Image (tube, rainbow, N blue to C red; front, side):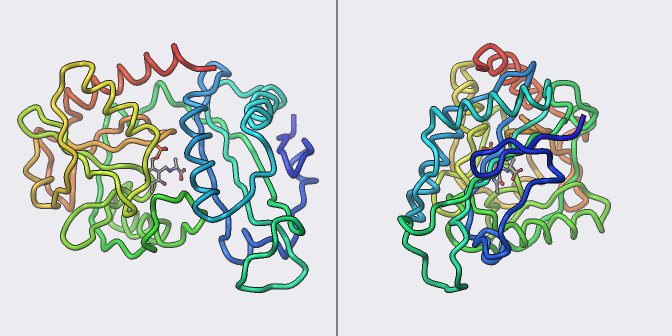
Length: 286
Ligand code: PDD
């Protein structure tokens, strides 16, 4: 069966889907996106992703082409049309396709925002990476300053990930003014003497939907949480490290810039958080 995607109101086979060459998402990365995971054919934390999407759009003065109820229905329809059981849904809203390329934004009444969704299969619950953990490098954070807005300007994170791959690692932690901001596509954490440490929210990191859930579950499980910046040196001395994202849940980090973290195997706290997250999110999936 060929993949069915959603483009501006229609479900069509991927090979027939078309987006204008004038689309500002294509020309200027003038677009916001969300990636939501699916387990057992059900959506994980739709409300969290829909709320962040609305915030991203409002920060950029975009007018949503759909209501959030319509968006939920589109998510459900695309899952069904692709028989998606486990994996994710990619959603992108762009500022549309004006006739003329202009740095100024077009009037939203004249040029409506465009919307695209597609699904992908990915094992989320049982994953080899979780058992083994990932190795990361550090690299300067050279992204723009509004990382709290989930835009499709992903060239720098993509560049950073390639630097990691060249060094035999799976990801990069971005560092600004001496402190870790986040991973290329995830939020970063360390654990020291039982306390979970992660950077506080601000414009300099994405407000991860998984981060919010993980911190809530950690507090409910009586774990200690500190929201503050940390350095790579502090991370290398930590007992555990891990990252969170919608499609990675909580993934252990076992090496940073060549230094082994803790015993070099995924730590107990990150494993426990992953278990709680998986269990709770499956229960709450819609
Ligand atoms: N990335 N930080 C960045 C820079 C991200 O791109 C992401 C998500 C996160 C984690 O956010 P969440 O828990 O809401 O997924 C943090 C997605 C998965 C991606 O780009 O594929």
